[in-house]
Image 1 (tube, rainbow, N blue to C red):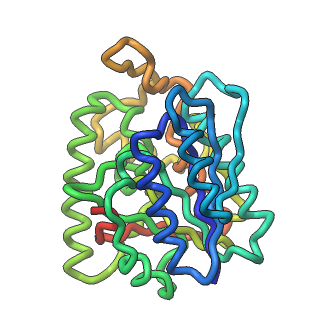
Image 2: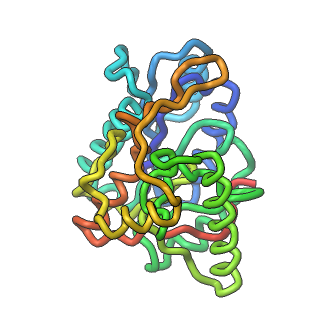
Length: 276
């Protein structure tokens, strides 16, 4: 049973040694594995770290992207993830599983590979992400009823980040007590394991894809958020744009929704914490 472990990197230097070591540990639970890294131009030592790691691990394939393709972060992330996804699709007979994994501070903690082993041979999921400590953090990539779209596309987004996070915390505690997984529309949380056969008819898309959201789901989110849809820019403390809501959404949402609609994929969240 083989797996392709995919990562996209840009300015990940402080975390990368630990993340790459974790990729090795995760790979060890499979009969064979491949690591594929898509690199975007960085201003730190990210590329040097990857090349040094590659000297001692011939399972790592590195693609160096030499040009900025889009001014929007989520669009570039989608391009990077689709490059990795295309590799998996082209080798679908070799890799019945693949992992999409962030290469930042979230995944440079200790990894509990026994948690992955626990689910690897179960048939209750097609895409599986995991809880995090102290709480589930990736509200940006999450769609779960009634919060079916992006929290950033409604008013009072900071307030609703906390509301949705607490909502998730309660749901995950409940399913943990019942020894089951939590079904959702989209979830990433920095790491997700996928059954390749269910994700051959989808792709990552960092654009705002309202066409993929059923109207009843959109109306449910509007009601829960007590808000109309908004499309605005969000800025970092230094004044630079963090998210341009006029043109950007989390790239994982379109990926998961299309897999559900086209292949009947079951997107699940484990209440277990994988990185601690």
